[in-house]
Amino acid sequence: MGRVNEMSDLGSYSSESDVLGYLDGRRDELVQLLSALIAIPTPNPPGDNYKPFCDFVANWLAEAQLEVEVLAPPREALPDLLRPEAEGQRYAVVGRLRGLAEHPAFCLQGHYDTVPASGDWEIDPYGPQVVDGKLYGLGSTDMKGGLASMMMAAKALAQKKGALRGSLHFLTTPDEEFPSRAGLAYFLEKGIVDPDYAVVGEPSGVRNIHVGMKGGVWGDVIVKGRAAHGSRPFAGVNAFEKMVEVASAVRTDLIPRLDQRVSDYDFYPPQANRPTLALGGLVGGTNASRATVPDRCTVSFDRRLIPEETLAEVEEELVSFFDDLQRQDDELSLEVKVSSKAPPMVVPADAEICRVVSDAITELAGASPTHTVSCGGFETVLFVDRGVQAVTYGPGVEGCAHAAGEHTILDDLVVTAKVYALTALRLLT
Ligand SMILES: [Zn+2]
Image (cartoon, rainbow, N blue to C red; front, side, top):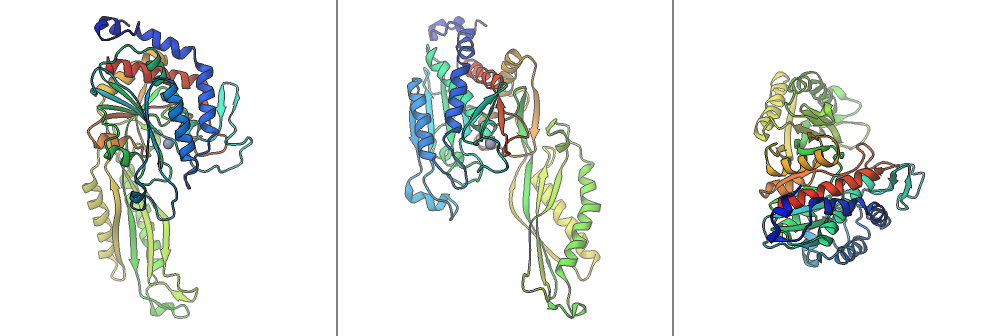
């Protein structure tokens, strides 16, 4: 544990254990901090209380001796960044601990918006309560717990600061849960931070790192028929009935093919270890009247890719599957429209960020971590797209995010804060 001492010309961290001991002694402060973050409701939509939340975080970081800025896009840029129905300004907070040089730079990042409260909460979702070593409240897992651990890690480093070789950034941004272009993407594009490494504190579990995520292709299948009066179905081609046949073919022919393709990576959850296709999130038709044979039926699809697949292969597979169906049925006319796509992403196990975070977890959480690809997406990909080595690692209880009774485990908050701090020390000294 003598890495820092060996570089005594760079500063006065007496040791890594000094920083870790500082965090061990501040468990109550960490719990209070998380409680305070939850008590400022930031549900999105609509994006309430963004300013008071960011002011609180900024003041806390400033008291902890970090350089702090609260930033927001210019008002005139908002109409292009936000959905038409969204209102209000979008703020981010960046806290900096500057070292001898700007680089290497390490960024701890997380979103501060939560989903709106839903379900049957037994407590006030914004009135956090501690019971049996767990803290209950909306956003405790997703992901104000991660933010609180990151803020405490930054404070520990600031308080115990000699001089870092590189710089530490803490960045919290809005609009992840109901995304807009005024969230992390905007602040990265504007160069608010320009790190070499990043950890996104979304809940991964304290002994697990999400090293990647599945990709996706999203779009619509549109079946065209021929309209007729509902009293004369024989005179038309019913687009809805044709769509039923299409959906059935997807179910019996395409999905079993995808099920055969088992990925070599480990996944969270484990059954996500193959490509998936979900049909029908959005369904539309002619909507003329009940007495109509519909001439149009639209069904959305959500195709998720394992890391072994490419976007081009998957699009080609979809198009040729639907082309084949069309060839087999003279009355079937359909079109596939891809509306958005994202490639799968995996950070190699030998990347420095993976090694340093893994070693820290092994030392502090009592077991070497699993490395998983998550089936859902995280903003981590925005860092990776910019050439930043980034992984997703944060406290929280899998499966309870976005639900009544969301909670997090207090011991895990402390362990995670220590992992963040040790990672920063080892990347920056
Ligand atoms: Zn989240």
